Image 1 (tube, rainbow, N blue to C red):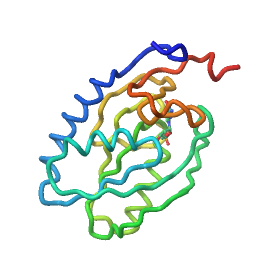
Image 2: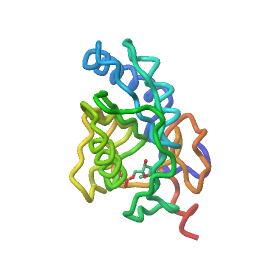
Image 3: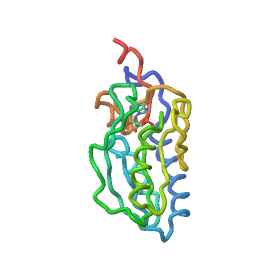
Amino acid sequence: MDSFVEEVLLEHKDIVDICNRLGKELTADYQDKRPILVGLLKGSIPFLAELIKHIKCDLEIDFMQASSYEGTKSKGTVMVLKDLITPVIGRHLLIVEDIVDTGFTLQEVMNLLQDRGAASIEVVTLLDKPAGRKVDVTPKYIGKTIPNKFVIGFGLDYNEIYRNLDYVGVLKESVYKK
Ligand code: 5GP
């Protein structure tokens, strides 16, 4: 195990299994809907890349970047740093998240996309931390529910590093409490 990791929560093969399960559900639910998968940058990229391999229907992808985090803490205010290119009016949207914690990011992004006239908006997240929730949002599709710990890997960063790990682990407190 890497020296900065306290515990591995998902091995790479677990992530592939999760994407396979979610892909089957999404294939059934989105046949003939040609959804737009809205990847929230940057953390969703590895998850989105694995997930789409398991969805067997027509789909499009686009990306948004919304930020509320500094280090390991949510600031509670969300800024849109990069917007979608695709018009969403009348379209079925599937927001792809790495992790849902407070829910601030999702709430903000969902409100914005709703205002633009999307036909439907659902959320697929690799990880859910319900104990951290501060607003009432519930992702429809969840890879794994995890305890309220700061995790890294498979897209998830600490100060922009560790996104390239092929697994998800809990970051040792000693790395950020110096
Ligand atoms: P929320 O707005 O729900 O609090 O947080 C959503 C975003 O915060 C995620 O997309 C992710 O970028 C970041 N985040 C939340 N919890 C964690 C965590 O445990 N580890 C890392 N690396 N990022 C997190």
